[in-house]
Image: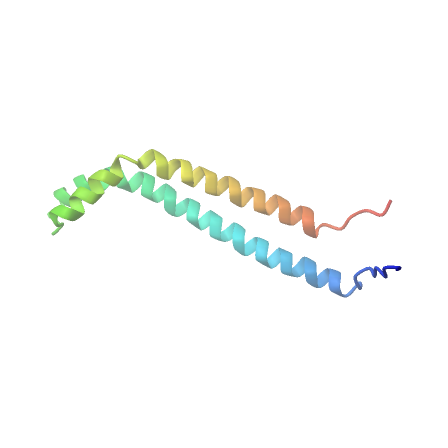
Length: 105
C-alpha cells in the first residue's frame, strides 16, 4: 500500500510561523514577568517586617510569622527568578530558530 505524503501548502507555513511566533512571544513575556516578580519577592521578603514595624502598619501576628518564614527562603526566590529569565531566553532562541527561514540545499 502506497502512502501519499503531501507537503504542507505554502500558505500554511506562514500561518504556522505566525502562530509559533505569537505563542512563543507570549510565553517569553510571561516568563520574563514571572522572573521580575520572583526577583521582587527575593528582595522584599527580608525587608518587609522591618519596614512594616517602622511604619506602624497594622500587621497581625500570623502575617508577621508567615513573612518571617518566607524571608528565610529569599535565595529560593532568587534561584527561581534566574531560572525564569533563562527559560524566557531559551524560548526566544527556540522561536527564532523555528520561524527563521531555512536555506535550500
